[in-house]
Image 1: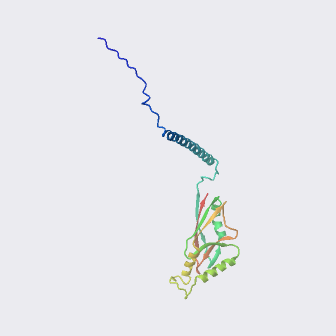
Image 2: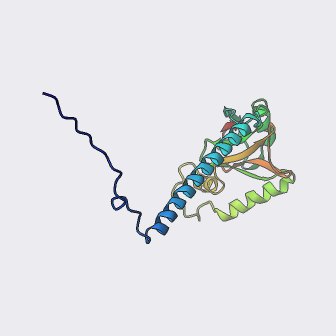
Image 3: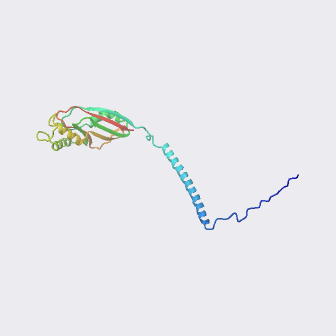
Length: 213
Protein backbone atom coordinates (compact mmCIF):
# COMPACT_ATOMS: atom_id res chain seq x y z
CA UNK A 1 0.00 0.00 0.00
CA UNK A 2 1.52 3.24 -1.06
CA UNK A 3 1.43 6.11 1.41
CA UNK A 4 -0.11 9.25 0.21
CA UNK A 5 2.18 12.21 0.04
CA UNK A 6 0.57 15.33 1.25
CA UNK A 7 2.22 18.58 0.37
CA UNK A 8 1.37 21.74 2.14
CA UNK A 9 2.20 25.18 1.08
CA UNK A 10 2.81 27.67 3.86
CA UNK A 11 1.58 30.99 2.79
CA UNK A 12 2.90 34.23 4.30
CA UNK A 13 0.84 35.66 7.09
CA UNK A 14 -1.90 37.86 6.08
CA UNK A 15 -1.17 41.52 6.29
CA UNK A 16 -4.16 41.78 8.53
CA UNK A 17 -2.31 39.77 11.24
CA UNK A 18 0.81 42.04 11.36
CA UNK A 19 -0.40 45.47 12.13
CA UNK A 20 1.54 48.70 12.63
CA UNK A 21 1.17 50.55 15.94
CA UNK A 22 -1.62 53.04 16.06
CA UNK A 23 -0.69 56.43 14.73
CA UNK A 24 -1.20 57.97 18.18
CA UNK A 25 1.54 55.77 19.71
CA UNK A 26 4.18 56.44 17.08
CA UNK A 27 5.37 59.77 18.59
CA UNK A 28 5.42 58.25 22.10
CA UNK A 29 7.47 55.26 20.97
CA UNK A 30 9.86 57.56 19.14
CA UNK A 31 10.36 59.78 22.19
CA UNK A 32 10.86 56.75 24.43
CA UNK A 33 13.58 55.43 22.15
CA UNK A 34 15.24 58.84 22.11
CA UNK A 35 15.18 59.01 25.92
CA UNK A 36 16.70 55.53 26.21
CA UNK A 37 19.49 56.46 23.82
CA UNK A 38 20.12 59.73 25.67
CA UNK A 39 20.23 57.91 29.02
CA UNK A 40 22.77 55.45 27.67
CA UNK A 41 24.94 58.30 26.38
CA UNK A 42 24.79 60.07 29.77
CA UNK A 43 25.75 56.89 31.63
CA UNK A 44 28.64 56.33 29.25
CA UNK A 45 29.90 59.90 29.64
CA UNK A 46 29.59 59.68 33.45
CA UNK A 47 31.60 56.45 33.60
CA UNK A 48 34.21 57.97 31.31
CA UNK A 49 34.41 61.08 33.51
CA UNK A 50 34.61 59.01 36.71
CA UNK A 51 37.47 56.96 35.33
CA UNK A 52 39.26 60.20 34.45
CA UNK A 53 38.74 61.59 37.98
CA UNK A 54 39.98 58.37 39.58
CA UNK A 55 43.07 58.42 37.38
CA UNK A 56 43.82 62.02 38.37
CA UNK A 57 43.52 61.06 42.03
CA UNK A 58 45.97 58.23 41.52
CA UNK A 59 48.38 60.56 39.73
CA UNK A 60 48.10 63.18 42.49
CA UNK A 61 48.75 60.58 45.18
CA UNK A 62 51.80 59.35 43.30
CA UNK A 63 53.28 62.83 43.04
CA UNK A 64 52.21 64.09 46.49
CA UNK A 65 54.60 65.52 49.05
CA UNK A 66 56.59 62.90 50.96
CA UNK A 67 55.01 64.15 54.21
CA UNK A 68 51.58 62.95 53.07
CA UNK A 69 50.78 59.64 54.71
CA UNK A 70 53.58 59.89 57.27
CA UNK A 71 52.50 58.43 60.60
CA UNK A 72 52.37 60.97 63.46
CA UNK A 73 55.01 60.84 66.17
CA UNK A 74 54.58 61.17 69.92
CA UNK A 75 56.89 62.20 72.73
CA UNK A 76 56.20 62.84 76.39
CA UNK A 77 58.22 64.12 79.30
CA UNK A 78 57.53 65.34 82.82
CA UNK A 79 59.39 68.52 83.70
CA UNK A 80 59.85 69.59 87.32
CA UNK A 81 60.05 73.31 88.03
CA UNK A 82 61.80 74.13 91.34
CA UNK A 83 59.73 75.85 94.02
CA UNK A 84 59.06 79.50 93.17
CA UNK A 85 57.96 82.40 95.32
CA UNK A 86 54.34 83.43 95.07
CA UNK A 87 53.69 85.27 91.81
CA UNK A 88 53.96 84.82 88.04
CA UNK A 89 57.16 83.40 86.58
CA UNK A 90 58.44 83.16 83.01
CA UNK A 91 59.50 79.55 82.40
CA UNK A 92 59.81 79.38 78.60
CA UNK A 93 63.58 78.83 78.64
CA UNK A 94 63.29 76.09 81.28
CA UNK A 95 60.69 74.26 79.20
CA UNK A 96 62.70 74.54 75.98
CA UNK A 97 65.83 73.31 77.73
CA UNK A 98 64.00 70.15 78.78
CA UNK A 99 62.19 69.36 75.53
CA UNK A 100 64.40 71.01 72.91
CA UNK A 101 65.90 67.78 71.60
CA UNK A 102 62.53 66.07 71.18
CA UNK A 103 60.96 69.24 69.79
CA UNK A 104 63.52 69.49 66.99
CA UNK A 105 62.24 66.25 65.48
CA UNK A 106 58.82 67.68 64.63
CA UNK A 107 58.09 69.52 61.40
CA UNK A 108 54.50 70.33 62.35
CA UNK A 109 52.45 69.48 65.41
CA UNK A 110 51.22 70.47 68.85
CA UNK A 111 52.78 70.70 72.29
CA UNK A 112 50.45 70.14 75.23
CA UNK A 113 51.52 71.23 78.71
CA UNK A 114 49.61 69.93 81.73
CA UNK A 115 50.30 71.15 85.27
CA UNK A 116 49.68 68.44 87.88
CA UNK A 117 48.60 70.79 90.67
CA UNK A 118 45.52 72.62 91.95
CA UNK A 119 47.12 75.70 93.53
CA UNK A 120 49.18 76.95 90.59
CA UNK A 121 48.40 77.66 86.95
CA UNK A 122 49.80 78.05 83.44
CA UNK A 123 49.20 80.84 80.96
CA UNK A 124 50.80 82.56 77.97
CA UNK A 125 51.55 86.26 78.26
CA UNK A 126 54.19 89.02 78.03
CA UNK A 127 57.76 87.71 77.96
CA UNK A 128 59.69 91.00 78.12
CA UNK A 129 58.59 93.40 80.84
CA UNK A 130 58.51 91.81 84.30
CA UNK A 131 56.12 94.54 85.44
CA UNK A 132 53.38 92.69 83.57
CA UNK A 133 53.89 89.66 85.78
CA UNK A 134 53.90 91.79 88.93
CA UNK A 135 50.73 93.60 87.86
CA UNK A 136 49.03 90.31 87.10
CA UNK A 137 49.78 89.08 90.62
CA UNK A 138 48.37 92.34 92.01
CA UNK A 139 45.21 91.86 89.96
CA UNK A 140 44.73 88.27 91.17
CA UNK A 141 45.12 89.30 94.81
CA UNK A 142 42.52 92.05 94.43
CA UNK A 143 40.02 89.86 92.61
CA UNK A 144 40.37 86.90 95.00
CA UNK A 145 40.56 88.18 98.60
CA UNK A 146 42.11 86.25 101.46
CA UNK A 147 42.33 86.65 105.22
CA UNK A 148 39.76 86.72 108.00
CA UNK A 149 37.34 88.87 106.03
CA UNK A 150 37.29 86.45 103.09
CA UNK A 151 34.19 84.21 102.85
CA UNK A 152 36.08 80.95 102.23
CA UNK A 153 35.43 77.76 104.21
CA UNK A 154 38.38 75.76 102.87
CA UNK A 155 41.29 77.14 104.91
CA UNK A 156 42.92 73.92 106.13
CA UNK A 157 46.35 74.98 104.89
CA UNK A 158 46.14 78.68 105.66
CA UNK A 159 44.40 81.80 104.37
CA UNK A 160 45.97 81.43 100.92
CA UNK A 161 44.60 77.88 100.48
CA UNK A 162 41.22 78.48 98.87
CA UNK A 163 42.32 81.61 96.97
CA UNK A 164 45.05 79.51 95.35
CA UNK A 165 42.48 76.99 94.09
CA UNK A 166 40.30 79.75 92.66
CA UNK A 167 43.23 81.42 90.89
CA UNK A 168 44.29 78.06 89.47
CA UNK A 169 40.87 77.62 87.89
CA UNK A 170 40.89 81.18 86.55
CA UNK A 171 44.03 80.66 84.45
CA UNK A 172 43.80 76.89 84.07
CA UNK A 173 46.34 74.10 84.31
CA UNK A 174 47.03 73.35 80.63
CA UNK A 175 48.29 74.94 77.42
CA UNK A 176 48.34 73.81 73.80
CA UNK A 177 50.99 75.41 71.59
CA UNK A 178 51.74 74.93 67.87
CA UNK A 179 54.99 73.37 66.69
CA UNK A 180 56.53 74.56 63.43
CA UNK A 181 59.89 73.44 62.07
CA UNK A 182 61.08 72.09 65.41
CA UNK A 183 60.13 75.17 67.46
CA UNK A 184 57.22 76.39 69.55
CA UNK A 185 55.44 78.78 67.20
CA UNK A 186 54.59 81.58 69.62
CA UNK A 187 54.46 85.31 69.03
CA UNK A 188 57.50 87.53 69.50
CA UNK A 189 56.34 88.82 72.88
CA UNK A 190 54.69 85.65 74.14
CA UNK A 191 56.10 83.46 76.88
CA UNK A 192 55.00 80.57 79.08
CA UNK A 193 54.14 81.56 82.62
CA UNK A 194 53.94 79.42 85.74
CA UNK A 195 51.75 81.25 88.23
CA UNK A 196 52.43 80.21 91.81
CA UNK A 197 49.49 80.95 94.11
CA UNK A 198 50.81 79.61 97.43
CA UNK A 199 53.06 81.31 99.97
CA UNK A 200 54.81 78.06 100.89
CA UNK A 201 55.35 76.72 97.39
CA UNK A 202 56.59 73.29 96.40
CA UNK A 203 58.20 72.05 93.16
CA UNK A 204 55.68 71.88 90.33
CA UNK A 205 55.44 69.09 87.74
CA UNK A 206 54.39 69.72 84.15
CA UNK A 207 53.64 66.83 81.78
CA UNK A 208 54.57 67.85 78.24
CA UNK A 209 53.21 65.84 75.32
CA UNK A 210 54.40 66.41 71.75
CA UNK A 211 52.44 65.14 68.76
CA UNK A 212 52.95 65.72 65.05
CA UNK A 213 55.02 64.81 62.03
